[in-house]
Length: 322
Image (cartoon, rainbow, N blue to C red; front, side):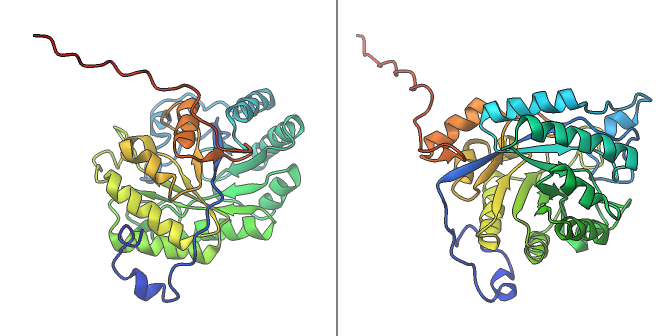
């Protein structure tokens, strides 16, 4: 692992050295539902808005999630084995009306699935909004820093790095479990990777999603294709050393960028998103469960490691005919 995480300047800037890493042998599964509450498209100024650019080109409004849809999606998440349910909305931040609808959906989910943790991701939060979420039963709040402070202005011009940090502090002050990570593959340097990792460490998040950019045609970052499976593993190893006691979650882009090395990521991370992401399809949840079992691990909540659901097909013998 030491070789995996040799980043320029890491040892000098983290002089106490990496802490001991302890693994419980379990992988936390998180499922995401994304039906945006926002009825306005994201600004084209924001390169990070690789997510809803197509909606910005049409006059149609993004549908709001209903309580029934949220409860149905939560039931699917529980059936998949997920213990956390992430409810996401695109846009700068919720209006009072949108927050009211969102909290109603959260209460419905918590009534139907009282043991399922709800994580909200609604953008920037204003005064009192984090408290409203906590009162509704939200357990965690996700708001990623995405990249280093030095690289941030090259990526986003609609709000500042400080805005993001402020939202995370509001969420933590309201008693919400802070969830914050980064998105890699946007032209950042090795120094930027270390910078954002150390900045996140200073915010002490309980869970740290590590995303890998999937370039989408028609977005400002469509030409970026710089990630390799090895680089992704090195990033995961660095984040595991920086966050020995946190949930390091392999999030968007793992199937595309880790490819055949996906199972090795489970030796570094202890959480993954199961199923689909915000704008792209993920691999089938059953494939995730099989991958976890193949590594001798178990999904969080399962008592013991279990073998894959099915045995591999018997190989055909090669016979020599003369």
